[in-house]
Image 1 (tube, rainbow, N blue to C red):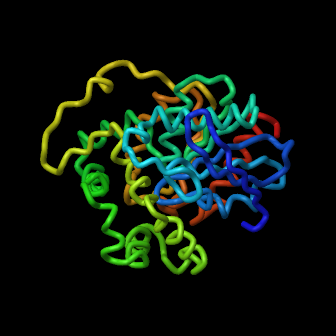
Image 2 (image 1 turned 120 degrees about the horizontal axis):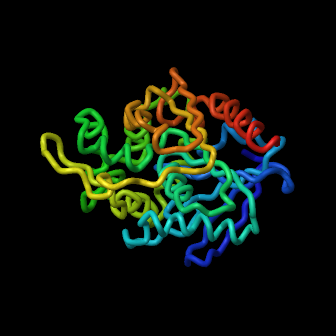
Length: 301
């Protein structure tokens, strides 16, 4: 990723984001939002596949890597993070952009699309569940509930000290070994992850994405009623939407795709059978190809 440029943008939301960019300045803009426990480097495999034509804008989201890391979990409520996105759009003067999100970046992207901002023209989601389906599955599906118990671990007081207790390298292996073959991660990438995580206050800030979120994750075996928002009509996503899903995702099970077509007005769904949660860098071509096709069919670009 040596062909990236970096700019620090002080936003009206009160945080400064480190933003990586690639591709032509006059190309169709794509904002790409990473998830946990990553950074703009989530997109390292996509940059060489897309930067010939598209202007790629890849922020480190608040709490991660090179961006500001507020320590109050209230600073990680979804509405505040969505506000960061649109403050960045304001700062860059964009009036037409495509939004791509993976993991927590996808959660932010779903929420942003539901705002109905006319500048957001197209939505691309990579292994990130729609909020209605995810919350419903955490209540009703025992397998998804079991797969999501890590969220409760991350919310436990003091968990931010755990990686130092076992060692950052051991924590790295524990984080990724259940999802990908560790051999595909170059040593320099592993070193970059650990350098980012181990900055003072950063790992606690990363955990605040879970601690500040409203999602309810019941312990196994506990019956809970559905939250009120699931009992009311929920607005549909109105922008054209591409969902690319690694079907071997062990954290977000394939049932997250069930009923998605009832929540999105114009949905294109691509299943990638031989990939898991970290699809953007495990098999970047499996994201780039349908993304290009999607953009060409909806913009001509």
